[in-house]
View 1: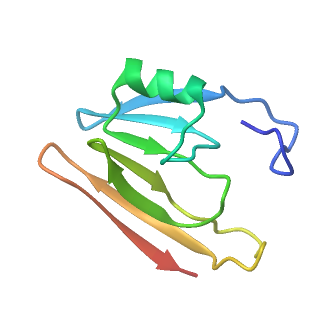
View 2 (view 1 turned 90 degrees about the vertical axis):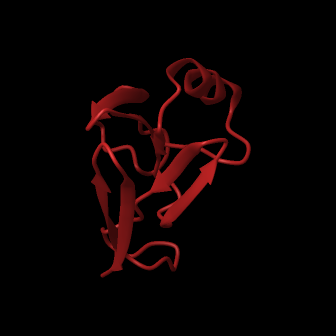
Length: 104
């Protein structure tokens, strides 16, 4: 996922897809929910996830677009770029998905 100052020398898959509680989650480091790059747009179209989880901006974000929840849990590390530190708790079962952002 690296590629910028987030790169710690560890190597991860660029994109991962996991299923939890019969929900599909697509995880990708950099996603612009309103204008995804072609490669991630194609992956979203082929995987048809319920949720796209991303990071990079360090800002909490949750918005449903085209029936998909785009979700950024925020950033809990050392303060950067004047953003508030936060964590997110994501609750998911067969009936519902809900989340809570908690400032640190």
